[in-house]
Length: 128
Image (cartoon, rainbow, N blue to C red; front, side, top):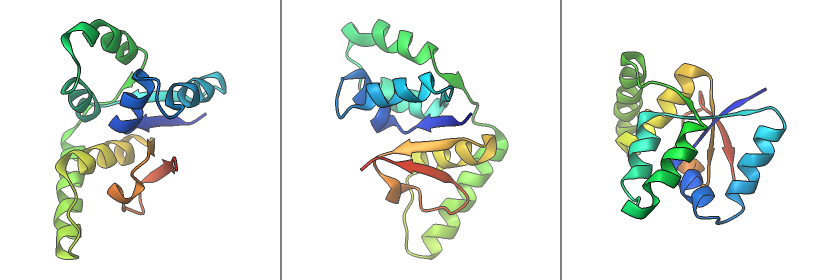
């Protein structure tokens, strides 16, 4: 069994019925895998929710396994941003925190933007 941390774009697509994301997430759950979220993915998700859709999104989010942004997660995200900046690669704070959450909790990130997560320590399932 794998616990997947969907990137925000995957959650948005699932809620909007786009790109087969809802079906893909459903298949993972039916196979016995778990779906997770973290404060960053939820904050990004709710930053685009229209008032009429809040209850639908809240219901969906309740089905996801919650993982905290701990001090260790924050430190790892900061270290990655520092290290990659020295190589000329800019990581967004949100992506670094999502990656660090996955790393800290042993989660696999599902994303359509694998280039946002260049860390070899992080397990990625990229949709293409």
